[in-house]
Length: 310
Image 1 (cartoon, rainbow, N blue to C red):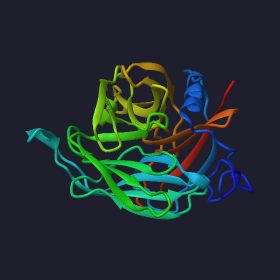
Image 2 (image 1 turned 135 degrees about the vertical axis):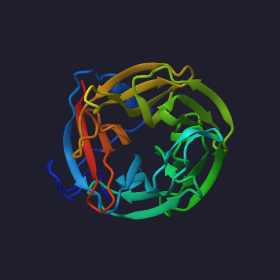
Image 3 (image 1 turned 180 degrees about the vertical axis):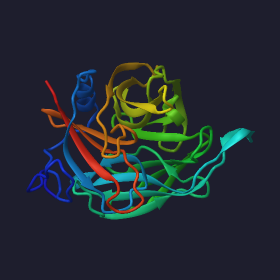
Image 4 (image 1 turned 30 degrees about the vertical axis):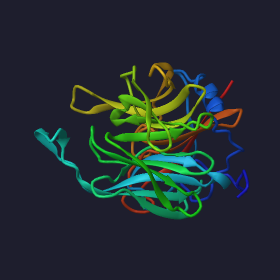
């Protein structure tokens, strides 16, 4: 597949591939772009295409070679149930489900599929492609639980277990410079650093409490970029969703730059609700997002948004 598709899709829903320029999703390029974001940044939807597969509950999205996109998602078969009091240290039941990784493109095509997880470990998180492998953390759908981190071949979709960890890993990204893996726990309350065989080398508390970062987008030079959402109650029992993008100092857990995101999906969710990938083409910061759930093909959309860079 070439860097640009032959014909751009209109902002309306379509299954035509959306034209995108050559991209740079390196840490340096994305961090530089994110540092330009402010409260007044406007995002324009340049593409909205339905997925040709059931997207279930999307969690992560990343771009691989030849512009294929990989989407991690949780199929919830039985929802978790809150306990009246903690049971064996858990605040809810494990539920049941299936973890999926789908291969698609900017037209939402169904190009491939595999499953991840075992038993009560069925909830994939934010994923990353390091140039050779996809890294897919899969956890129980509850805090303070258990995770399996998988390494997936992007071409064959063969799944290999990399390591296990006794906590919920909600997102992971590989540092292209050091080779280390950086991850976030449930609600991104802790930032973790691992070797590729699972040795925990560093952890820090997240110093920001405005937004729970759901997925890490990129990492390098001591920083990573994270995106996510937090919901705040309103007087009429409704909730206000605040989306956000941040540059995080890995060593200290301090937020060095952050900006809110208020752009909404077709179903009214903030676009950074879960699955997000960012890239810089020099003139715009581009976001690929899959915020909406969908039980059937066409229910959920791939959104492509852009904001101009100075």
